[in-house]
Image 1: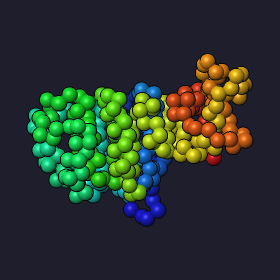
Image 2: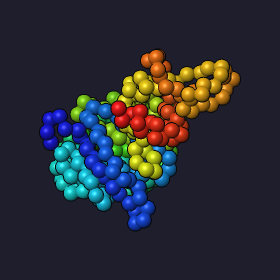
Image 3: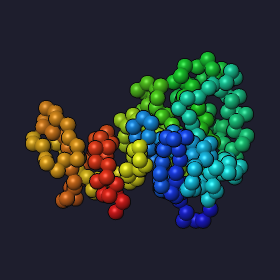
Image 4: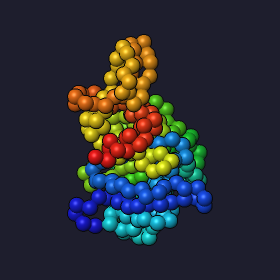
Length: 281
């Protein structure tokens, strides 16, 4: 992998399940030191994209490379630096600690002390049998293990599902603490409020590919998130409330505003072609 090459590069990717086309000419890059939020409606291919990046699915055409290696080759040099947390996990009938000890052998960056610390942070008993934990506890144990592997690529599919509110707060904190300059973390989610203020850049997919792949800074330069007593005819999306209309507008005067991920997502889905053009510049 060359020094300035993105950690994950996808070029002109096409993928389909028999007659169902998922991606057509999808191109994007994921750079080190970022926590990407992968957003999209159910069924647009978020999980499929993560499985392609991890090499579990092979594209029909185009290319996906991770650390300079074609992902579909499942090369051990790539796999030792990549981990994928699926949304659905079948917990084995062994203690959590033994699971970590056995499965970490393939990952040279594994830090057992870090794993134990993260389990304590999540209030997970690492001596408990994995399959006897609640769904939320299983999810937290697996996340603790995945973060402690210290892989350069970490893919997380709906990691906040099954977690209570305090655990979601802890999740945001530990992911932020474990992010490093040479690591790419991709989080697929439809629960945008759970991960707001953590994910940046934002990737939004639709049924025809990608609507945008942009940093929060770039989004805030191009869009204005504001409340006004009247509805602007330029609004990409709006919602009425007690104080007027909360709107997403073109940011013509470079005004400062806080990016609202839920509003961004709704505006992007309503103005797909406009946003594709706006964020391709």
